[in-house]
Length: 112
Length: 116
Image (cartoon, rainbow over all chains, first blue to last red; front, side, top):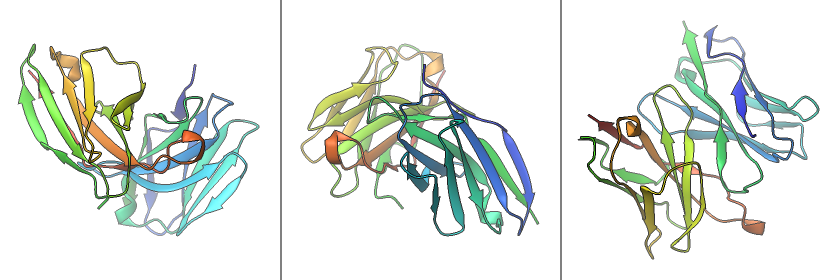
């Protein structure tokens, strides 16, 4: 069945360093992937998305890489700031075309 | 701010009771999805409403039901509450795109339900 999983439940980085959050998926039919940031007590916030016809997409301080061969995507955050501390989820839209399938999340902690 | 508002923000119910959660979607959005997020987990898809009809459902029993109104706002109803229904319930609005695929989802802050 479909599943989206994250390699690490927690990640601690120093302010100013780059962060990399990884995610594996199992559904080869998935063609749209999204990264969300969720701060404590808030709903998920869209960060960046990527479609399966791309292998890289860049936003402001964030880059998403997609490797369809090994069904893996990553979120890279440049110059991590304290405000980046949150739980990050990868999600994919598979066969349904409308339901997001979320992973469990990685908690990112940025230390001064 | 996503423009998606949910109410109430917190509520406490007891087993067997019924609850109604409400969501106002972002202006211009015609699709509403509901997700359940248990503590420490990712959100799980409950169902989606488009043109006032349920358009798709996840692995949730029939006691989870919903409505979408002409102004695209929505309600989630849960009957016969169980302890495991305790969770954050998230509403997300979007605009249906080409080939009926959902566009970018904008989430509300959620309604925190505790069942005792």
